[in-house]
Image (spheres, rainbow, N blue to C red):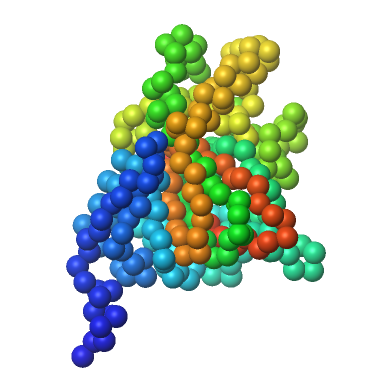
Length: 286
């Protein structure tokens, strides 16, 4: 006879959705991600994610295998291209951590604030989703902010919508910086993508630029491009478009890089922070 805990974990899938901020984000209650995800649960998770852009599940206990299996439900995980290896089993697993061993960080993006960005937008095929799981968090800071790209686009003045219609922007990434830098000539990779992209599932338009990586708008002088990008960054980063997530150990978030940008707040350098990340491969933005 099964024990009570196992019976609870295998009960038919169903969950409650709780909106966590006016701008975006929903918490899902009643799902244990160690359990298999059937087609009905997958569709319900997808529908909630498409509606709210960011989904949160708290109090999860996940090893690498469980996190990767959850990510694979929504598409093929993207392999890490930095040349570093964080997992012997899963080439898609990255550690985000300031913990150091022999003076070297065990993870990527170790320290401090990080400007708003969309994961892998500097590549031809960016990530459609990121799945981030908290293992250790500092006593304060290290929060992740999410900004709603649909709302940012929809509330732009019509004159600016007209200026950016059909234009592309160059996204370039300097892997050694978490803040926007003046130069991007030595960026590890770069790619031109639409300033405004259409989500393949919802068919809604989202502003697809970000302060960290978007460098110039095609067809404009450098001065015009810089001024317009600054307006777009300031507009999309308004507090009314943002949900700020304060991490707890056991939190897992999945966000949609096609319609939301995210950033990180500073945190005490002497406190440990360890999260495990898997990104899900998307499609070329249009």
